[in-house]
Image (cartoon, rainbow, N blue to C red; front, side, top):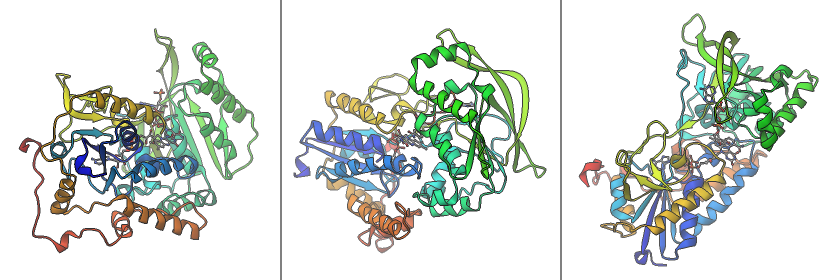
Length: 478
Ligand SMILES: Cc1cc2nc3c(=O)[nH]c(=O)nc-3n(C[C@H](O)[C@H](O)[C@H](O)COP(=O)(O)OP(=O)(O)OC[C@H]3O[C@@H](n4cnc5c(N)ncnc54)[C@H](O)[C@@H]3O)c2cc1C
Ligand SMILES: NC(=O)c1ccc[n+]([C@@H]2O[C@H](COP(=O)([O-])OP(=O)(O)OC[C@H]3O[C@@H](n4cnc5c(N)ncnc54)[C@H](OP(=O)(O)O)[C@@H]3O)[C@@H](O)[C@H]2O)c1
């Protein structure tokens, strides 16, 4: 169809699950829609490519569905275009009836304890992005020359990072882990990985399938202290209602009863401990230990359980501390932001002005930046559908310049090397071919320059046309 006739032009910021589900819902609802999906990275799919663990390939097949969405003639993908830097939100509003922020929540939540910034203490967000070959995290270099690693938090990300530390190089080599991470993990000296939860085993947030994997590792034994499995009465009540928690505790009971197999590595789950400070070695720069406070559980009025410190401190050796206590959103220039929750304030996806709470016409949000960093890939589908339903009921402002080619011209004049979905397919094919040669699912290209050159020579080269540059206006210019 001719894009010029599109009655509804939507810009989606972020090509992760929520961006693709937003596009899909729009396509299904309206034949006269055109959707442009922007991503700051040359590669699409957000955390499916750069978050989901490299040894969990099956779940990544969801990208085939996103590729189908991208193949619809009403959709265009603009990779390597960062909204808020290369193009402002105000500029998008000049060309689209609606802008949907679906840019995820890539930052880490901090613990706020002394020693958090020592070398060897890093957020799981960085470690995950490093082993998954995110272009901005290739230089992270987590120190893996010590024997003791402590992972703080008992969510699915915590168990992902602990499993990656515990796996053998042969196990990892069957995945699409980034080559630089495979090399570093091959040389890893880590022997003991402790995963610490501040509440009890029944309150752990990880899912049972992910927990079970610790019982199937080629080179690591798993430990759970049977004393940790004596549950608070409120936890027992919770278990009776909550199947995942019930199964988790069953699996942990199985682990606690299991004889050790004498493996070179050990993974231990510890519960009712909170980190209080991270201690340095004599150089004052590197992590040597972490001080943990023993907790007990108290029941809140609503029946949930909170942890409170008992004052009893323990010092655990650690040369690597991975803080896996959740992700956090970051603001987008030109869009309101709720600092405390790390989300864009919204009502069913309709963006609200920071203070007044009035809707901002034409601005919407979906996914982690809408509701916070929780939920699996599928959760974003219903979330995006809610946003699209909201968008379709609203009166949308008319863009000044709705020509489909306007954005291309702007990017071109600004010298931004955007890549389209066909160019992404070239990268994809190359990675799959390299993977096939090595008996791996894929070999990821990491740096932006490698990704862009694999995308093909059709790219615009700003050096060939240095004469025309379009400065990025401030938001006030509009
Ligand atoms: C480590 C980890 C592992 C996970 N594993 C699983 C799993 O195994 N199974 C499962 O079901 N769920 C898993 N999840 C959850 C799942 O990944 C999320 O629910 C989902 O990715 C959130 O989708 P999103 O689109 O909101 O955000 P994201 O996936 O983060 O996508 C956001 C996209 O926006 C882009 N972007 C950011 N800023 C800009 C900008 N300024 N301009 C343009 N683009 C921008 C980013 O590059 C990114 O591509 C995992 C999450 C994490 C953190
Ligand atoms: N395989 C998969 O399906 C998969 C893989 C990875 C991620 N995901 C999803 O992605 C989302 C994010 O995962 P996540 O693991 O980052 O977050 P999460 O599930 O919210 O877990 C965060 C963990 O950090 C703990 N925590 C928070 N603040 C703490 C503090 N100050 N001190 C000690 N512990 C603290 C929490 O404990 P409390 O419970 O006590 O607050 C919890 O155990 C989740 O929905 C997850 O299911 C899914």
